[in-house]
Length: 237
Image (cartoon, rainbow, N blue to C red; front, side, top):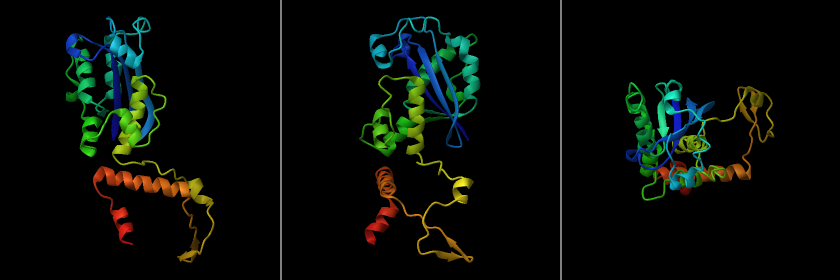
């Protein structure tokens, strides 16, 4: 399964007022793993940037003066997207701007929803956490994801952070970190060997930090789903 986590920065908040996209950042996920294949571009919007938007992302008109226009990158951008599912936080905002850019091409191109399925992580977060703050920063705090570098918004940085949030929100750990090398040379101590097919099995006990992380994950599951069978069973023990 191929997904693309996508974010944009713009000259202002209202596409209806002629504001334009100035940065696109996209992170590829293959079978729920970050592939390392990213897409990132700054764009010359050929218009001024509102002061409020500048305070959010810090991208100046002077910096963008020598950057390509959307028409010059549209083909490469759409080729990168392909028919992947798009993962976007507050998708209507980003899609509104990108669809407008596509509509301004000659000839105009159809909206992205006609090309790709879309997963809106803001909608999912509101379903999981009703009545709570569900901004990207709030979700980072909830899922214990480091966003300390996010002093200003940036499309690629935000897409990378959103990829971590999305994976945590929709299933948690995706890579157990196992390898044939680690299995071939066990490092745990043999404690009261359990016999199976005549060979002793190595039992490695969890550390205090690992137990604490496990407990935190179970509590997060209970918060998201409303219950956690493992915790309920422990309560009955």
